[in-house]
Image 1 (cartoon, one colour):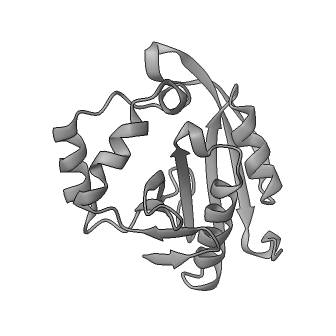
Image 2 (tube, helix red, strand yellow):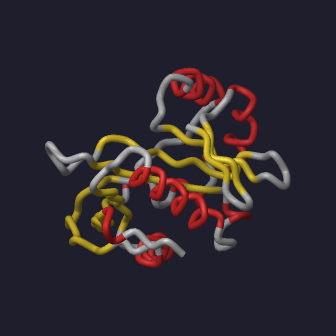
Length: 175
């Protein structure tokens, strides 16, 4: 996978990205709304080595600096069966939040899924307190399908309600 947008390159992660990744993946900003544990350098290197053949792991590189500022995971939809569907999850470094980069990246990726991979649906999930992520998804045209209460144990053993979102091919925004 390789996509370019105005400000970003979306591509497979490389071993050289580990340093950038470690600068933000273990931050409170990233961990608080993800079902992840802290990542050691060794574990990050192993993840990136495994990702070289995994098209579902996407690094977000900022063109202006060449640094990786976030990650997107685009795998099999965990809720739909027998439907051409993708499920996305994502995070980025706090310094780059609220600058439109994630919206730019997701818009390009969603378009790629609908136009090139011919998926019917793209799904996303986010924890109920993560209002910024909910607004992002809604701004991209996603519809809120519902909430699974007390669904996921996240960082710090906090149990979150999980908000379910989706967008269908015919709902894609072209602007």
